[in-house]
Image 1 (cartoon, chains in turn yellow, green):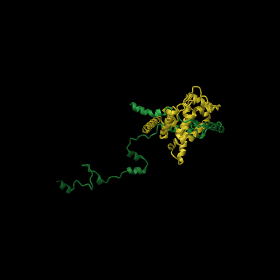
Image 2: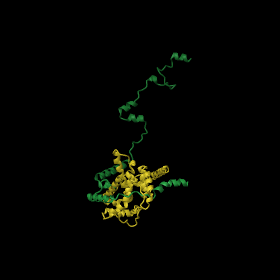
Image 3: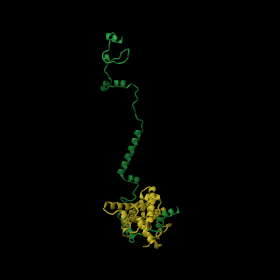
Image 4: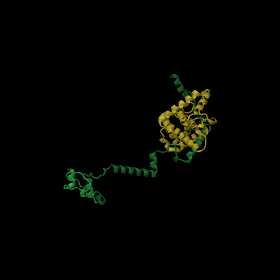
Length: 204
Length: 150
């Protein structure tokens, strides 16, 4: 399906989709249109946010079906908010926060049930955490290698790496999204990078 | 130094350019359909547990029990603050002897405690030596004492 045109000033990201990192005031304007139930606004929001939300949910849960469920639930929450969407100051961070909480609920449900730990499920059934960009298919091997290493990180560190590298979030924004202090977010990122470096060095 | 920086940048270099996978093809229609159904099911209704619910003041304002509880708490705090801020009444410090105070009181038990029995005469101190001795007070004209002293 053809993606809707991005709002004025928005960039298109590396997949040719409307930019997730467009300015906050444009995000707010879009949410106001969604709150007003304008035709096409929800579709535009999906085209802007779904890719990053899906990636974040996939990195958090490790399962493509669960990530799809989370993205669907995020949009239901958006609609349910209605007029209260006007009060959202940072829509991008808010959407990621909703996705994070839904992933957390899912993880809690799984912990109640006798199931495998969430970290062990990451990357199973071919749910790759990273893929090569369409413009550079030669990096498919790199993507596979990076995904295998990322699957070995704890979920908290993986989320920080995702938000830093793929959602262009500052440490303060990461802290707000994950509900942790800024210093902890920076510390988690440093630990994750150190661990990835060790995995890279030990790889054949 | 350069080598260690290269090592440190290696994960970032590996991640750069790679992207998370795209959502499945059917997810767009599924999401939008679910969102529209939710909008129809609850037109204008608030989400029961929205991810970012109303702030504390809105909840206080909208709920009558919470509003009453808040008003009662604030009133209690103001009253307690007023009571504690008032100069506390304290009894004036007495400079009199506690024995005199006790004797003047109407408590019979307290009066009995301080009403000490009189010392028997043989326990009184010597008028000239000023110390206490046990037993009977010997007479000055006691011959045995006089002989011992000589």
